[in-house]
Every structure is written in structure tokens, then in C-alpha cells.
Image (cartoon, rainbow, N blue to C red; front, side, top):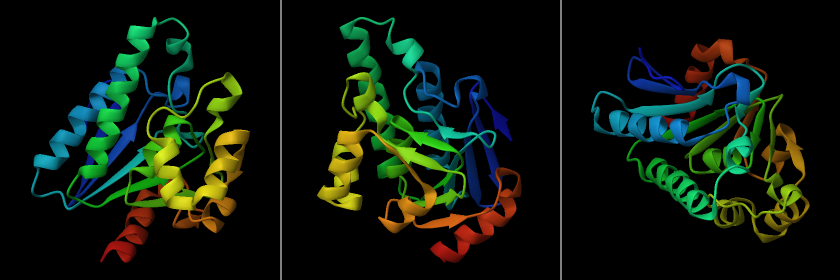
Length: 203
């Protein structure tokens, strides 16, 4: 197991589990998280022994709460542009990875967290998941590719509803509209069973 400050990389045979571990901020992505995640994707991409990748969040409360709002309020426009560009770059890197990538969504997947889940090939949500693009509630639009990917996944009507209202939806509703593939009652501690479930989907 290789551990950085905020990203844990846990190989499980030929599956790599990437875990965002910033519990104090509900696994929100600051610049350090983004940089570590980018390096981790490079590692798994070059490792021929890894056949599939799982991305999840540490703890039961949050997959990823998205952008770090506390960081954003203190940066200037140039810093904000660099921050958004770095986040977009790592999400694009995940989307283009030539291995199946599965989002194991536990708890909150909001804003950039929802956008992180959407770049994955398969999305499995725990029953406690809350998913959405709430950026409008703080006066901004989804800036990490959410407006484009959400439209492609759930269609224009639901995408507009989620972006215009900023509301969070349950895992069950997310499955109903096609935003997640499957809802499970498994907890993050039951990762072996989650992995087995994922293999049933990708084999």
C-alpha cells in the first residue's frame, strides 16, 4: 500500500483502490489533493498489473465534497483559473485512462465530487449517497465539466433541473435517472464485497 498525505493507493490483486482521505473537509479537493490524485492516476496507468481502478472516499460521510470552498474564497481570479484548470486536467486524465474506472460513492458526492464520479466508467452508490451540483447556491456554475457530462449521462431535462436548482438527490433517484449504475447497502468497510460486485459488472 502506498500512502500520500491525502490519497491512499491500495492495490488489491489486480484492482487498485484509490481513496481520497481528507476527512476534516469531507474529502474536498484542494490543490494538494488534485496534485496527488493526478500522480496516483499516472502510477496506476503505467502499472500493467492493474486491470481496474476503484475511486472512493475515506469514511462513510463523503465520497468527495467537491471543490474546497474555504480555499476558493481566498484566491484571486488568476489562482481560481489555475485551480479549475488543474481539476479539469485530472478529471480528463481519469476519463481517458485505458482501464475501467469505478466510482464507489459513499455519502456526499457534490459539485466537483459529482463531476469526479461522472468521469468514471461505472458508478456504484451506497444507499446513504447524496449526489448533486449545488454550485448555483453559491453563485457559480459547475466548473469541472459538470454541465457537459451531466447532460450526456442523464439528458437535458434532468441535467437542467439539477444544475438550475442545485438540489441534492438520493442514491435511489440517481439510479432511476441513470446517474449511477447500482445502489448497494454495503459500507466502505466491506470493500471486498464491493470489489466482487464490480467484477460481476466488468467481466
